[in-house]
Image (tube, rainbow, N blue to C red; front, side, top):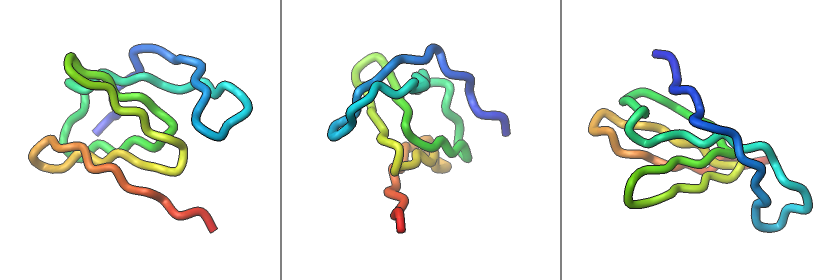
Length: 74
């Protein structure tokens, strides 16, 4: 299943960072079950905004919930 295209790219300064990072911004309604999107990214919907740092991944489950998982860096 193809991933949604970002609505835009924003330069974002994440906590602890020194440089702005080009970050894709997705619209929540475009995510479908089975999608997996790696951070950094931003997910926007009418009533909330989800900011996902580079060590985290969004997975959309069968009920269309967003599950956010930390990816350990060794």
